[in-house]
View 1: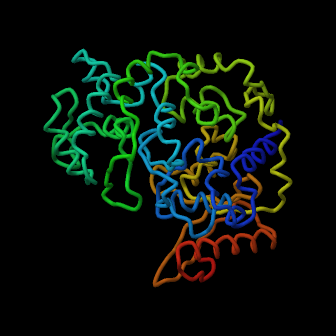
View 2: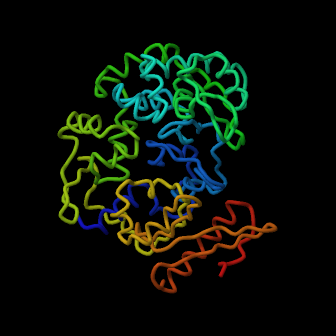
Length: 387
């Protein structure tokens, strides 16, 4: 496959080639949004709701719809899922091993290990306290204060920014869903509440699940994180998936070997990669041509860990992924062709764009059309592109 074919395949696999509001007539539109298999990151002013609208969901749909749920999951970031699948999502998120659990909690693992505490056991301990504390919607700060009082020193750190001692952030976030806790959409600071009808015993089985081979955990195929990554962001390498999950490469390679014939090797510009065997590696973007999307800074298409493939130019990569203040991406049939930033004031929205190469009049018009949709999504008036 060529680089262009890979980008078009991802564009189509994620449903970005669909027309505006393509799923609006469907009462169960969320069932047909493939990115919900992997989770849709809800970061930034438009977040997951705009990402779903870009993939054909009704423009007025919001993440607060009862059929969706928000939780801290991959890399501790908030992601949206189909509510009915949350227990299976939690099972899919159980670390691949104790070493995986250590890597996912980053610097929190060192004091736990020095105290002789497995990270797996620590997550269970934190989850049990969180479950006990949250009997009604609870603001994160209150949860943190009560949790800090409930655990011992290896779980805690001094936070210079807060000028207080509290739990390490990643164990706090990663334990929440396993404790049967979700986030209330639109709350800042975050508010946690109990997931209705959460399966009894999930936390009790957590450590056992970590020791169980992933193939025997009963996770539905479409929610398996490695499979889902390869469907939506493949062809890919084991290192790409490991970076996306914050998991050790060795654990992901073992999972790769377990999948066996489910994966097919693909040559991409002379490099070995793998795709899901049931994926259409010949996809051309669903026949799309001239489809422009204004992706949010944390859209899944931009979360692929082979950034050098997505944006070959080093200066352009630095512009798209700065350390702070990411812009959105202007994408044409899977190819990033520029960046955009919203400029809102007084109920009016301007969009500041930066083209990486001259755009055709058709692309210019398509950018304006998408910006008008963004303004309608936000409930404001589109006032044109900012200079």
